[in-house]
Amino acid sequence: MPSFDVVSKVDWPELGNALNQAQKEISQRFDFKGTDAEIERNETGVVVNATSDDRVRAAISVFQEKLIRRKVSLKHLTIGKPQKGPKGSSRIQIEIKEGIETDKAREIVKLIKDSKLKVQAAIQEQAVRVSGKKRDDLQAVIQLLRGAENLGLDLQFNNFRD
Image 1 (spheres, rainbow, N blue to C red):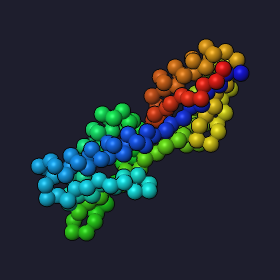
Image 2 (tube, rainbow, N blue to C red):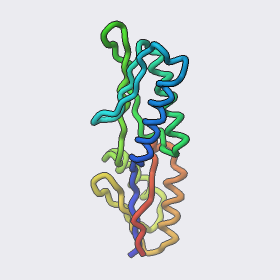
Image 3 (tube, helix red, strand yellow):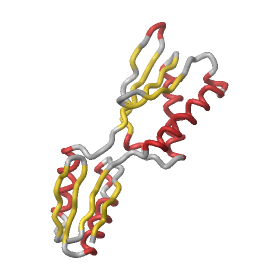
Image 4 (tube, one colour):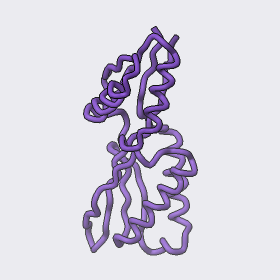
């Protein structure tokens, strides 16, 4: 029985490259001189520090620009609220989400079941496995999920088996 997995994964090497490019650009740009702006990675995501809120937001936009150029979806990012630091500095935590949360997985399964295609969808940890008798039905599900903009996830379809 043909099947495939719906996943949401981050391309970590490309994200690291975008981070390095953003760090380099921030260190060289004139409008960031004297603002102590820096972008660094930590265990939950990325932290952006600078002397003011607007410089932090400008550094985030540089980082997002680099991600777009490297074809990493911005849907993986959750930008937090600005936090005050010492001497009036500001910092923002950017969380990087990978995988499909249970609520979103249920939403995907419901969307597939509402489409009345003859396929079964099952939640497996941070992925959704879709299986059916016909390959055409599975391709119709892929098109359905690509067209669903309200999910707010960057979906990939892998592990296609006949």
